[in-house]
Image (cartoon, rainbow, N blue to C red; front, side):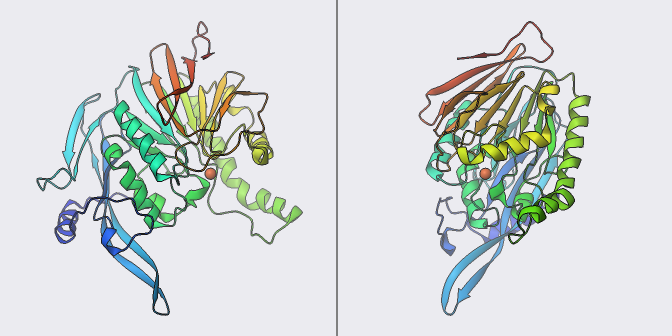
Length: 393
Ligand SMILES: [Fe+2]
């Protein structure tokens, strides 16, 4: 999202549009369109945060003969960068100041030092809105410092109606907690994604830090440089070599530099959408090709944990000191775990999320089912601490 500072415009629009309760209705009619999306928090640092929201800007009706086939809402996207804040401090804000709670939120700025903090991760929230809502409610109760979604936030990034539902489900979470996103294949590299989110760097692959922990988000989808469907065999491979690959070669060089320059990090967490070790038989080969391209980059740089989505289950693999977790149980239909790998430690076909406590000496990851029960507990040692060792329960 490109920053616009349009408080006044928001007030004027909100004076025109009423504020009905947000409803989860995949097949909406005009009466159920949200009058406001957000507010929501992005891009937190110890001294700043972005507050974002979107307001209606009309809609388009698509007719076939005399029948309405589609009603597409349009939005104006707003954000304001709040600067000059104190680290590790609680603030409240109100984008409407209309005497209601609709425009209100709170946030807690990131700490400067490596103090303990708590965050949550979920993925593939794209369908199964009730499950998504259950997980969001659990995360809200944990009061995390921030949340990461490992991609496939919605079933089709080009469908604005699905984003309306997504923001409706998340409203009570993301007005108080910064939300980081990863590009999934279902985002379809859609303009809507970039309109709504205000992420660091180029917004496709980026990093942020909290205390002395480094968080790296990668884009494994790439811009729309996929080979046309009619290309086959050698032509497809040539298309990848000569057209698509250059994007990932550049991203890989960026990652190599980033990890080299952050060797002092207490923890390094990496996020991308597709899996590193798939235990879904039809995707094992694809994951092997991915590992062949990226090589040993995560292990060589002592990355603490890699977290993925895409395969709708929970899986934990471990290789050469790096943990690989598939957390794609945010709502999408579950897959069978029918191809366990030598690196697999735990796999379960279950909706779930991750609850993570980053501490001075170690990080504790708990994988939690929607009913609150524990799937697995993983202990991650602080980097560069030879006395510590990983543990699983
Ligand atoms: Fe996916």
